[in-house]
Structures are given as C-alpha cells and as structure tokens.
Length: 320
Length: 320
Image (cartoon, rainbow over all chains, first blue to last red; front, side, top):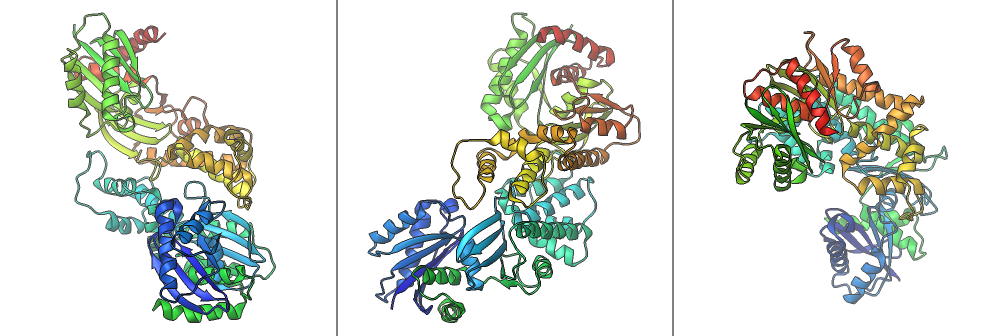
C-alpha cells in the first residue's frame, strides 16, 4: 500500500492530509499561512513542512509523494524548495505543485474534465481537462480583473456609499451599513467635507486595497432587503462571473464547481450561475480533500468518485 | 509698495513668483517636487524654499507674505514648517497654505465666488465663496472616488483590454493601443494564459495603482476614432464629473473653472461640461498665477480682474 500527502496551502492556514492510495485519510495537520506570495517563501514553506509533519504524526508512514496546492501555484520555484525542506527533516518524497483551482475543483468531483468558477476575495474561472489545468479566465487581480469577486463587490459598496455621502450619487442603504463598519472617534482633517467621508477614507486608505472585500457581504444583505444600488452591484458581479465562466465553459454537460466564500449555496451569485447552467453546478468542499484526490491521482492510483467519497468520509473525523 | 510670494507646489515641480501688491510679477523660481504627501515633508519644504529664494533672486525685496498652494493643503502642519524653513534662510514672512483647487480657480478668474472642476490624475470639484473654499465633492482618491479622472479612465481602459484579451469582454481598439504600451521581451510565468495578459499584468502590478492614469489618453484617442467601448468609458467619465460638479454648482451663473490635464479645450470631457453649463466655463491657466492672486488678496490689496490680467501679462515673460 502506497501513501501520499495532499496539502492545501492558503493565505491564512496550511492543511495537510496523509492518506493511502485508496483515499483512506490517516492523519491531518494544520499550520499557519502557506502562500509564498503573501507570506514570503521562507515562512510559507516552513508552515507547509510543519503541516506535513503533523499529518504524518507518530504513524511512521513514509509518503511517496506530496501534492501541494496553492493560489497561483504555476511556474513557481516552490516545488524544489519544499522538496529540499522536507528532505532536511527526513521526508524524502517527490513534491508536485498545482494551483488552488485544482484542489477546489477536485474537492467536489472526481470527473477529470470540467470547470471551476471561484469568487472569494478574488475571482477566477478554470477549465480542467483529463485532470490537468487547461484554461484560465480572469483571476488577474483586483486592479485588472477579479470581476464579480469580493473585492469587486466591496469596492463598489464603498464607492456607492462615498458618492451617497457626498451627494454625488443616489441614496442607498449601503451607506448606513458602511458607516457602522468604519465608525471611529477621530476628528476629521478639515471641516469642508462631511466627517463621514473622512471615516470611510481613513479606513480604506489605511489598509490594503484587497481588504475592500470585507464590505462585500453588505451588498448581499442590502440587495436581499431590496436596495436598488446593492442589487445593481450584485447583478454586475454576476455578469462578471458569467462572462469569465462563459469564456471557458462549453455546452458539454461537464460539471461546473462553484468555489469561494461568495458562491455558498443560496447566494444570489450561486443561484445565478445555477440558473445559467442548470443541473451542472456542484458546490466545492474543503480544498484539502481535492489536494488529497490529486495526490492519489498523481501516483497513478484510481482517483474516481469512490475514492473521493472515501476521502471525504475519512477526512471528516480527523477535522473534528 | 508691499510685496508677496505665490507658490504652486506640485507633485513634480514647485514654482514661485515674486510680485508687488498690484499684481506686477518681478521674479520667478522653480524647484523640484513640492508636495509633502508624495515627496515627503523635508524634500517638499526644501524645494518650496529653493523656489522662493530663486524668485526673490538678487532683487533684495523682502516679501511680507508667502502664499503656498498644494494638493490637499488643508489641515496640514506645512505652514509653520515652511515659515521656520524660510526664517532659517533670512526670509521672515507670514506663510499661508491653501489647496491647489484655489490656485487653479484663481488662475482663470478673479471673481471671488464660483466653482472649479478638475480632472487630472485625480478628479475633484470645489465651491469657492468670497475667496474661501466652501465645499468639495469627490477628490477622495483613486480607490474610493476620483470619478472621471485620468486614473478612473485609464483603469477602465486596462480592464477592458484585459477582458478583451481573455475573451471575457467585447473586442475593442483599446487592446492594441494598450499592448503597444506594455510590450516587453520577458517570458510569461506559465503558458495556460495568453502571453499578452502577462504583459499587461506585469506593467500594472509593477507600478503604483495611480499610474493607470497614463492610459487615459488611449480612451480619448479610441473614442475619437469611433470605438464603442472607449466611447462608453469617456461617457462614464463625463457622467462622474457632472455628478460631482452637480453636487455643488447652483444655477447662479457664477464661473466654473475647468482644470487638469483632461479638461483641455476641445476634450470631450471639457465639451460635455461646457454643454451642460453654457457660457459659464473657463479654462484654468498656470496655477502659479492663481497662487499670486491669492497672495495679493491675502494682504488685503485689490485682487480683481485687472490684477489677474497684470499677473498673467507680467508672469509670461518671466517663464520664457
């Protein structure tokens, strides 16, 4: 019986699972930020190694392959660096690296050909063919793309509130929701502007641009309550997701996996995608399960629906 | 006869003019970046002092007041710091600070009550009453506002080109114009995406976000040539400028000064503002002239149309 490790390395946490070639999960480990781009290579790799060691635990099992998935994940030098770092702690294993779109896709289905649409802080669509990444649309970042992402929505929420406060744009329920989030006790720099606008400016310019994504849920809440501006924002986000999805998805009946914090079951964006592609949409599960399936697949073992089911069933108790 | 100094301190250059209380310009000096926010307080003030010394030259004239205008310019500690820096080189003068919207406005008219609309890298509208700043709309930065600015337009140009390249958005003549600007010899990070999208990403994420403004002229060029996407962008920019302007401008016949690099005579944005406010729009001139008029006004001397004309007529030869 061969064993592998699947790792889902994210911006805030790195999760690793040890499993056998049938998909039976035997150990789970967790560490901090694992994305080299945001956390720095040294810290990210250290956390990837720590999660791997924790997943192996006291089992004494030597994995033959480590499959690491992370945002971007293409064309990086991460693979050899992780391989060296693992060897340094006595784990001699082949390391393969894939994008987190792959782990998200294979968390929901073992079908080797299909599509993924993700909307979280960013937004990306992907086409997977025979288990390999074959196409990407969007996912090019908050300044150039990420249409329909949390950033895209939150950014518009903030701009709409600012325009309302200044009398440049229509009144919207978003303004009160935004102001409740940015309230502070500080005094404005001058009194030509309304103090509310200074509160919004201090909050937004005091943090990284991508943190605008924190305001995205306000649009969903206000849209559900009937606010016209919020509805327009949500509708625009769906248009963006449908456009990037539509650049890749063929009328082939293949599955479309919906991933990311904004595509939870029942969200208006998820509902819109399901209405456009009836019967084809699946919700993504834990990316660690997808990394585990990719690891099984990478050693040439059967990675079918039964394997994925076994991964989910045996991973769940380890997370409890 | 009393004398004053007017300074227009900008992001790339600081210009100072020495004039008498009738508006007759006697000396001109120029130095580097003078905005404390972008250049840092020490360098900015050093350049403001250098420009002042150069304007005084060998005249032996001691100005009674220095009026400094700069972007933002409100609620800063700049005034006392400049005053101390001037005193250190033997120039004992009262220093007053005003926003660059004031120097832009008074470069075009001596009428003490009116409006300004500016679209350069950023965008802002202002109401001036009795020579004092009485209201602002927008000018809250590229992330939250600046609707209709160079950033706003250039950002949309880049997003439209990216969507076109990826097949997520309509074809547009902007794409070829953008690619001509971002072409490089580097190899892409991976080959799942088209290499063109990597060129755009490297350029945009390799510089500061505000530098997207460099792509704004492409929208004006493509719109003039009939490109539908470019026309929509320019139309949206005009809508934004009209909204911020409309939040302040009353139906009072007062002048509206058009300032900034995108509101040159004959630009579609300028034409759109002139069509909305017929007979009221004036093009801003050199901000140094406006700072000079503000300086004359600050010592209580007549600052009327004749004074402004004299400033323009006597400043021009000094710039030659």
